Image (cartoon, rainbow, N blue to C red; front, side, top):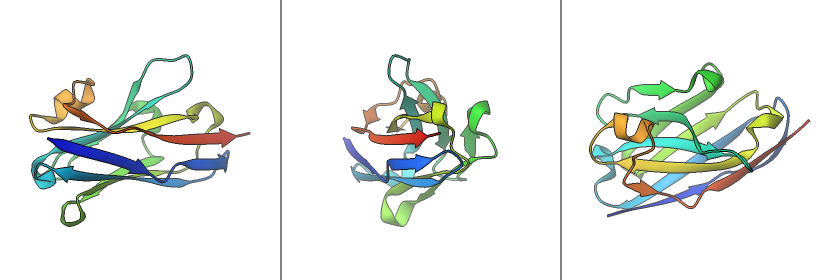
Length: 124
């Protein structure tokens, strides 16, 4: 079992930055594939980014490439998502997700574990 707790959300103006954190407890985090999703009001949840545990290879949604960066510190059981050049349409609840099986499962939303989410609000 893995428990995930996100933090770092807040309100910023368009063009601003935030860094989200996802702290894991329970199962060995260092061998878990981790990702981030977001869900805006009235919209479906969408994939944002994911990272493997061994080589820390990252995968991004096309809409965030070049602006968002996912990283992890296995010693701290923490995954980070750096959000730069934020846009108002990226206002959403951002969720951390984890899978013990594969990054593919995370990417398609079939993660085994989910956090409660952290709100990101971007004003124009």
